[in-house]
Length: 550
Image (cartoon, rainbow, N blue to C red; front, side):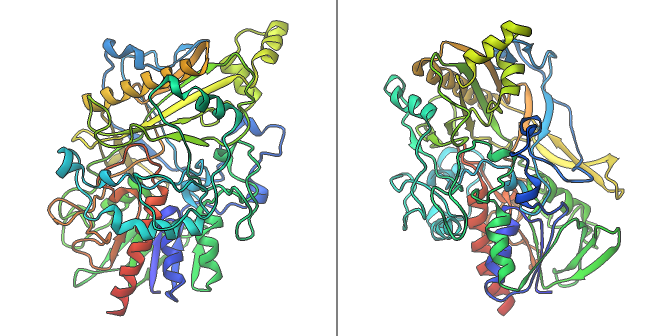
């Protein structure tokens, strides 16, 4: 085999496509199952709202948490609450809720909302310009052409006017129109200092390459049954299969990467869906398991010379963990906005996205409409979270309020600190007897200051739009609740300060590459990471082709 790819999300899928189209034979090993969009997503069923993404994984991903930090009285305005239940976390300690991750062919793009963002150019120089995190060993300009390639494969819809992110080509498709609810935010933007733009999305605003345009059901997170959302399975991996050079094997868990002589790995050991164990050799191994499972696999793999973990010569595998820093405020608008319709995040504000945009904290953030991401697109959650009571009065209030919810959310920069890292939990094992990943997370004063800014700005937007009552707020201060995670196998030029080089290649193991968000030296100011992962994978695939030909 030429190349083994471990994981089939944004990095694994884009790698498989970029390599297989060059005639390079690729085996993709995915621990989770394959999904059939026409059969496995249940938006047409009466009980569609009672489940989020329909997880088919027979053995869900296991992970544990380290000790969480205490909560302080002075930050009570950052506590998660609902007007019916009160405080959601009634303890005096931050609670580990969830790492939102899908194991399956397509990875977490199966349940993402389709945001397709390029990083702000300034995010690539966080250490040299702002004294935090680390610099990327490449620039925005180095990735620009690969960003464009990824956008064409996915079919990204967007507007071509973002001066902060220079473009060499137009978006493949025009932007989606703003929903009626989002139009209300735009119409009242003069009452705040936020400027709103159409979001760039991996959902089709028109038919594209045999896939239909979006029907605006507002439920991207539950899986798209029409293939209009550009998840990796229906884009990169579909195209990779068509080359005849890509084999995708689901329900196949890699136990370890096998090290060899001359600073090269030999291949992998994995267990297939029947329970049979296989050893497969390859000229190149690509790890694309995400910022939690990638360091776990590396730490579980033996170097053969007594070192702790593969590619861990710097001791940084698992370190520099960055999580999702988020805040959401939801309220009732006096007008029926029909806010259950549209797209989850059709408009976005980049006004505070640059690393130096917030006056009292290094690191930016973004704002977006978030009603669907708050899971307020159907009557069940209205009945449980928006409308109190029971019986006839409850029914009447439901009629009066359904469609009135307006939610605004923010995602901000997460900076690395020594108390946030991924390690092996030696006391907890998976079904194969391997230590699971343990997540240690800590928010320092800079993160909390940024979160406070994000919360106040979300409230300001709702108030300016005409919301008369905020009924629910939640954020990262009192809960670990992450979708975007980064940094645990950092890229860099110096082998003592990083795990991989600018081409995502292990500094020591010359045929071992890591292509997922674990290589990010910084998280960005709220950008969704999938497009950057895909662009990095395409860039790395060119380097791998040269390596194989050398």
